[in-house]
Amino acid sequence: MNRPEEIGYADELLADGTVHRRYENGLEEWRRRTSGHPHLVHWHDNRGTSGTDELLGDRIIKRSLADGTVTYARDIGYGRTLWARGEKVLVNRSSFGGRMGVLLAGLGVATLAITAAQLPPLSMSPEQEEALRQQQAQQSGGGGGGDSSGSGYADDGSEGTDGSGDGSGDGNDWDANWDGDGDAWNDDDFG
Image (tube, rainbow, N blue to C red):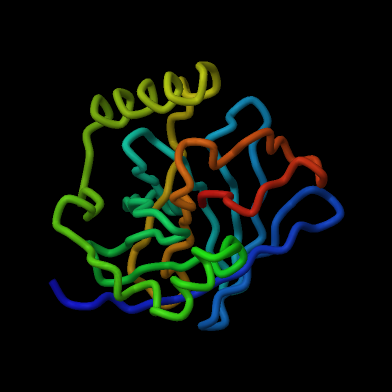
Protein backbone atom coordinates (compact mmCIF):
# COMPACT_ATOMS: atom_id res chain seq x y z
CA MET A 1 0.00 0.00 0.00
CA ASN A 2 1.26 3.51 -0.83
CA ARG A 3 2.05 5.97 1.92
CA PRO A 4 -0.97 8.25 2.46
CA GLU A 5 -0.82 12.03 2.45
CA GLU A 6 -0.57 13.19 6.08
CA ILE A 7 -2.56 16.27 7.12
CA GLY A 8 -2.22 17.40 10.71
CA TYR A 9 -4.72 19.44 12.67
CA ALA A 10 -5.23 20.88 16.14
CA ASP A 11 -8.44 21.60 18.04
CA GLU A 12 -9.17 24.61 20.20
CA LEU A 13 -12.12 24.73 22.59
CA LEU A 14 -14.03 28.01 22.27
CA ALA A 15 -15.87 29.81 25.08
CA ASP A 16 -19.27 28.78 23.71
CA GLY A 17 -18.38 25.07 23.96
CA THR A 18 -17.74 24.61 20.24
CA VAL A 19 -14.43 23.53 18.73
CA HIS A 20 -12.31 25.39 16.19
CA ARG A 21 -10.24 22.92 14.19
CA ARG A 22 -7.23 24.18 12.19
CA TYR A 23 -5.63 21.98 9.54
CA GLU A 24 -2.03 22.36 8.38
CA ASN A 25 -3.28 22.86 4.80
CA GLY A 26 -5.24 26.02 5.72
CA LEU A 27 -8.68 24.45 6.12
CA GLU A 28 -10.54 25.53 9.26
CA GLU A 29 -13.71 24.00 10.74
CA TRP A 30 -16.09 25.07 13.48
CA ARG A 31 -17.63 22.03 15.16
CA ARG A 32 -20.44 21.51 17.65
CA ARG A 33 -22.03 18.43 19.18
CA THR A 34 -25.73 17.76 18.83
CA SER A 35 -27.58 17.50 22.13
CA GLY A 36 -29.29 14.15 22.43
CA HIS A 37 -26.94 12.59 19.84
CA PRO A 38 -23.53 12.16 21.48
CA HIS A 39 -22.02 10.58 18.37
CA LEU A 40 -23.00 13.41 15.99
CA VAL A 41 -21.06 16.61 15.23
CA HIS A 42 -22.27 19.47 13.00
CA TRP A 43 -19.56 21.49 11.28
CA HIS A 44 -18.90 24.21 8.71
CA ASP A 45 -15.59 25.32 7.26
CA ASN A 46 -13.84 28.40 5.93
CA ARG A 47 -14.43 27.24 2.34
CA GLY A 48 -18.22 27.29 2.47
CA THR A 49 -18.78 23.57 3.07
CA SER A 50 -20.89 22.17 5.90
CA GLY A 51 -22.22 18.86 7.10
CA THR A 52 -22.27 16.34 9.90
CA ASP A 53 -19.89 13.69 11.19
CA GLU A 54 -21.20 10.59 12.92
CA LEU A 55 -19.22 7.97 14.79
CA LEU A 56 -20.60 4.54 13.93
CA GLY A 57 -19.38 1.28 15.46
CA ASP A 58 -16.17 -0.49 14.44
CA ARG A 59 -14.40 2.91 14.43
CA ILE A 60 -16.16 3.94 11.21
CA ILE A 61 -16.91 7.64 10.77
CA LYS A 62 -19.60 8.74 8.35
CA ARG A 63 -19.46 12.25 6.91
CA SER A 64 -22.51 13.72 5.17
CA LEU A 65 -22.14 17.00 3.34
CA ALA A 66 -25.03 19.47 3.13
CA ASP A 67 -25.47 18.49 -0.54
CA GLY A 68 -26.14 14.85 0.46
CA THR A 69 -22.72 13.46 -0.50
CA VAL A 70 -21.58 10.75 1.93
CA THR A 71 -18.19 9.20 2.52
CA TYR A 72 -16.59 7.13 5.26
CA ALA A 73 -13.37 7.18 7.27
CA ARG A 74 -11.86 4.92 9.89
CA ASP A 75 -10.15 5.82 13.14
CA ILE A 76 -6.94 3.77 13.05
CA GLY A 77 -5.57 4.80 16.42
CA TYR A 78 -3.03 7.22 17.87
CA GLY A 79 -5.06 10.24 16.72
CA ARG A 80 -5.08 9.11 13.09
CA THR A 81 -8.10 8.86 10.80
CA LEU A 82 -7.84 7.23 7.39
CA TRP A 83 -9.79 8.84 4.50
CA ALA A 84 -10.26 8.45 0.76
CA ARG A 85 -9.60 4.71 0.73
CA GLY A 86 -6.19 5.18 2.26
CA GLU A 87 -5.02 8.20 0.28
CA LYS A 88 -5.15 10.59 3.27
CA VAL A 89 -4.52 10.26 6.96
CA LEU A 90 -5.56 13.07 9.28
CA VAL A 91 -3.44 13.38 12.40
CA ASN A 92 -4.72 15.03 15.56
CA ARG A 93 -1.67 16.96 16.75
CA SER A 94 -3.55 18.23 19.82
CA SER A 95 -4.12 14.70 21.16
CA PHE A 96 -0.46 13.75 21.38
CA GLY A 97 0.82 13.56 24.90
CA GLY A 98 3.23 11.68 27.05
CA ARG A 99 6.00 9.39 25.85
CA MET A 100 3.86 7.75 23.14
CA GLY A 101 3.08 11.11 21.52
CA VAL A 102 6.73 12.12 21.49
CA LEU A 103 7.71 8.77 19.99
CA LEU A 104 5.04 8.87 17.28
CA ALA A 105 5.76 12.50 16.38
CA GLY A 106 9.44 11.62 16.04
CA LEU A 107 8.70 8.68 13.77
CA GLY A 108 6.16 10.45 11.61
CA VAL A 109 2.75 8.99 12.42
CA ALA A 110 1.83 8.09 8.86
CA THR A 111 4.79 5.71 8.65
CA LEU A 112 2.98 3.27 10.92
CA ALA A 113 1.66 0.39 8.84
CA ILE A 114 -1.78 0.78 7.31
CA THR A 115 -3.41 -2.48 6.33
CA ALA A 116 -6.26 -3.27 3.95
CA ALA A 117 -8.39 -4.20 6.99
CA GLN A 118 -8.10 -0.60 8.23
CA LEU A 119 -9.49 0.96 5.05
CA PRO A 120 -12.89 2.61 5.47
CA PRO A 121 -15.75 1.23 3.38
CA LEU A 122 -16.56 2.86 0.05
CA SER A 123 -20.28 2.67 0.74
CA MET A 124 -22.72 1.16 3.22
CA SER A 125 -26.38 0.26 3.17
CA PRO A 126 -28.74 1.90 5.68
CA GLU A 127 -29.00 -1.50 7.39
CA GLN A 128 -25.22 -1.78 7.75
CA GLU A 129 -25.02 1.74 9.18
CA GLU A 130 -27.80 1.02 11.66
CA ALA A 131 -26.07 -2.18 12.81
CA LEU A 132 -22.91 -0.16 13.47
CA ARG A 133 -24.92 2.52 15.33
CA GLN A 134 -26.33 -0.20 17.58
CA GLN A 135 -22.84 -1.60 18.13
CA GLN A 136 -21.55 1.88 19.05
CA ALA A 137 -24.47 2.45 21.44
CA GLN A 138 -23.70 -0.84 23.20
CA GLN A 139 -19.97 -0.08 23.44
CA SER A 140 -20.59 3.36 24.91
CA GLY A 141 -23.07 2.13 27.49
CA GLY A 142 -26.27 2.59 25.50
CA GLY A 143 -28.30 5.58 24.41
CA GLY A 144 -27.67 8.20 21.79
CA GLY A 145 -26.71 5.90 18.94
CA GLY A 146 -30.12 5.09 17.55
CA ASP A 147 -31.99 7.45 15.28
CA SER A 148 -29.52 9.84 13.72
CA SER A 149 -30.48 9.42 10.10
CA GLY A 150 -29.12 11.88 7.61
CA SER A 151 -25.98 12.47 9.60
CA GLY A 152 -22.44 11.39 9.08
CA TYR A 153 -18.90 11.78 7.83
CA ALA A 154 -18.12 12.31 4.14
CA ASP A 155 -15.21 13.43 2.03
CA ASP A 156 -16.03 14.18 -1.55
CA GLY A 157 -12.38 14.76 -2.37
CA SER A 158 -12.93 18.41 -3.30
CA GLU A 159 -10.50 21.11 -2.27
CA GLY A 160 -12.61 22.30 0.62
CA THR A 161 -13.51 18.97 2.16
CA ASP A 162 -10.47 16.87 2.68
CA GLY A 163 -11.95 15.11 5.68
CA SER A 164 -11.84 15.95 9.31
CA GLY A 165 -12.33 12.85 11.35
CA ASP A 166 -10.27 11.76 14.23
CA GLY A 167 -11.57 8.90 16.25
CA SER A 168 -8.44 9.44 18.37
CA GLY A 169 -7.60 5.80 18.71
CA ASP A 170 -7.63 5.86 22.46
CA GLY A 171 -10.28 3.16 22.76
CA ASN A 172 -13.99 3.71 22.94
CA ASP A 173 -13.90 6.66 25.34
CA TRP A 174 -13.44 9.25 22.59
CA ASP A 175 -16.39 11.29 23.87
CA ALA A 176 -15.88 10.75 27.57
CA ASN A 177 -18.30 13.17 29.23
CA TRP A 178 -18.12 15.77 26.47
CA ASP A 179 -21.49 17.46 26.26
CA GLY A 180 -20.49 20.85 24.91
CA ASP A 181 -19.44 22.26 28.28
CA GLY A 182 -15.97 23.74 28.16
CA ASP A 183 -14.64 21.86 31.14
CA ALA A 184 -15.94 18.52 29.88
CA TRP A 185 -14.48 18.73 26.37
CA ASN A 186 -11.88 16.18 25.44
CA ASP A 187 -9.42 16.73 22.58
CA ASP A 188 -10.25 13.30 21.18
CA ASP A 189 -13.37 14.63 19.43
CA PHE A 190 -13.86 12.22 16.53
CA GLY A 191 -15.02 14.21 13.72
